[in-house]
Image (cartoon, rainbow, N blue to C red; front, side, top):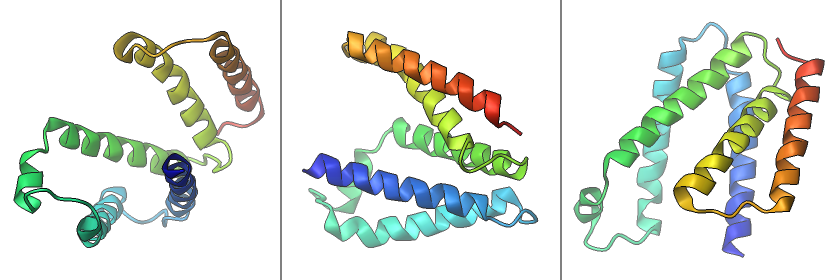
Length: 144
């Protein structure tokens, strides 16, 4: 059940994410807009902190953080800047995320198989083929 609630949260947040990126004013500095975004995210995380188990307190939790949090932060900046610039370049909210997310899913398959020993079944291969066909058609219809 928790998995489905978590996926529901990602879906709702992802929709809001793309809508808010799309309507961010064109004349705003993208770096300042993202810095404001991250300041808001930090405040939200601090407000959520009491709801998550912290064995040993905040400082003990901070000691468990490693380079992956920094790498994730840099990845998020790239993700958000990429979408913001794509929308400013005329990208459609109905197409840009589909192209990006499908390409990401396809590229994560070999990583999952080779690095994390995930299985690749016939059904998954069929899904890959359908994703590629979908990418072909969506790129024939609309790209800026």
